[in-house]
Image (cartoon, rainbow, N blue to C red; front, side, top):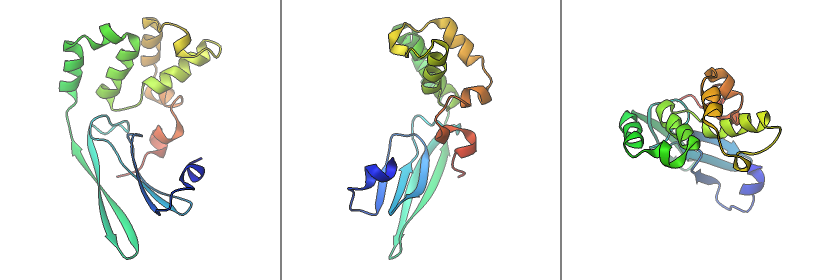
Length: 158
């Protein structure tokens, strides 16, 4: 899929964003980098990841850097503003992503759809009991519902 999306791109080096994971991979003729994330890591690292590019005539080399961060202030702000009360149970999953630095919302939607016989989350109001049951699962069980790239076995080693 990435090869198809990158086909019309003339440049050989592409900087991507939004997946919240550091990335340095080749996709066909393209060298693809993703900087990681500063504010919402999903690889379990409690902190920011950024990318420095070093170039020469042979191309670019990515040097990833990590800076530890404490997201507890962010979680406290969610609580102070009543985020979960305003957003509902989906908000609870978002707060858990900041608390754990691991994906929770997307795997929950897959898990719940499986339990609802294929219905998707927007088709029904999310019940607190469902979220409680999902969050009570061991991390390894939650990981099974994540896209493969976000599972610990596939995460880049920095």
